[in-house]
Length: 414
RNA sequence: GCGGGUGUAGCUCAGUUGGUUAGAGCGCCAGGUUGUGGUCCUGGAUGUCGUCGGUUCGAAUCCGAUCACUCGCCCCA
Image 1: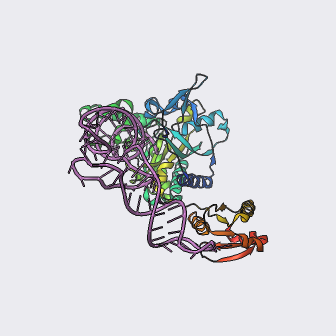
Image 2: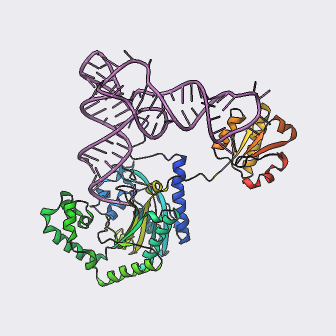
């Protein structure tokens, strides 16, 4: 409450950070546009039920991570912990149900009350896509391939791997869940306390427990793949063949499950080993039940979300692409003329910085440090001759250019 | 929510068994004869030693609490 510190788990993005942040967003959106996706911007808060009804009453996100509050009208409002529920709500309330198939891209802040770690914050940012209304496996293939294209555009293709699994349709999942619960219940004495809890709330989660004892039990457990009914099995098969056909490598991970209730069929995660415990960098799946569950017309969907901060951590430095011209006035008389020159050039489309203080040496040094391409030196001498000394800071070449023809002469710096 | 680690100048870090004016490198600022950068040389500024409290003649150094960061668990992007 006090002090000038930011709230725990939140961060300022200073220019060097925000440049990296925007580079991730823009690269992703550029790829998404090539796939025919348009951007949707939904509110960052919704009525609490939008999340509690869709994410499931047992998920951690709903039970302990939501930023909820009552507004002045007494409504329970929640800062969005993820993007899909809001997009689904907009789809239903915005009358988009007539526009299928629908391809949507989104980006923006998400909020979860968690213990911060590297790659995990309380306010973080996601980019994501949703493809609504395409039932066939080609939707899954395209959406996953697009995820890989985004990572490739960021130069991260070789640092991630794609893990793939199928949760099957509702019927397959229910059958498997029953078999798994029976198997685990018979071995309760060998399960960790965490997994006993999972057994009650979300038994599939036991599959990816990191506890050694649990792993031993899970190693013998029935496999989801063996419980897929014929349509589910064929669907998964088609997704795999399609990915192979378009050159997207993957590894099957039968223990890959989802925390959120609305997923079915395809589940996938692009992971890296470079971020410690937060290795998942882009993840998603098919959610055929979601829209119907929210009260809309039965509509299938598939999508993914990626953490911008996690991607940024992998990205390293992103250079500033803008290299300005530096106008350097020398002497009182030149100050006003230099300012006029700055404005004239900016209005002509150049990026221009003014060198304010110090002797010429200092001003050139500063111009150099800000990455300026050229310095425009304007002193009394130049003023008298109606020229400006243009010094190329990369080559060191310098020549006088008539003020009247400056825009033309500077064309190569535009 | 649970367990471990860390917290000293803008940044990266030193700081001996508690002892008196708290250091380095980088960065920043200013100079190296009046208007020429990216190299070099010289000089300079900057710290509530995270915060609060305790032990002590004396604490950046020991103890406690608190905050933040960090690693793992939980969960997830």
